[in-house]
Image (cartoon, rainbow, N blue to C red; front, side, top):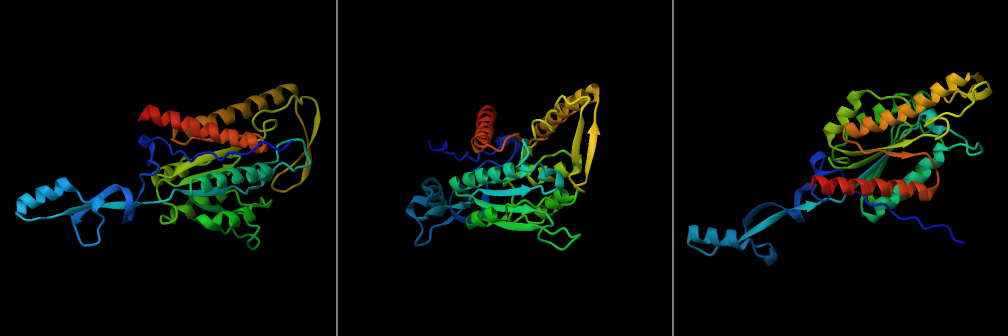
Length: 312
């Protein structure tokens, strides 16, 4: 039996009231788009379909001569997609040989889904991370792939298992993208793949909103240990620090395990509410199954379409 076929999800922008409408983002150069940029006099070689007959008639009456006015259009820009991967140690959990969620596997399948969506939309797609696996020890340099259609293969090759970025890697990524307005203009889909276990300053999100990117937080958390917490009260647990990789043991009471479970569930709920409250529509993933990941993004796209109809 062949595996279920994956379907590319549509790139649906957030409602017009909250951002730039998809397909309405205009370039500064003139071209064959849909939005009128202005008018000018007809010159030989102009397309007859671009003649504004009403404006031509008015101008001809005023000047008592045959004057033809043509419309100029903004050239439509291809949609742009940038994938930002958080490569801090916590996002490197858990190894594939453990019975819990392998976040690197989720990242690989999620990037595959996003690349498929970009190809279907004929979008320019780029990539950014601040993992130090490709830099000298102690350095934090960006691995940046500028948005273009032929970047798909290069991005696929970049997806690896190095999760050694500094705690400030996401702030560095935002600063880096803010310095690239030509490559990442307003309206760009920016998919941020992270577990978001560590809260980020409100100032970071304010700067992103001011840039008018269509930022989509992709929250990757293990459903057992991070979205919730198992009933392990009274047991001794072997644990490993994600940053230092040093092993240790942990023993919690029944009450402490329950409190941690409630805290983890509340953390995720609060994170989703916070994102939605500032205009971002997150996607929460707790599985590496490709079909379930595709379903989560199709649900995200459907939710946006419904919201757009209500706003419109």
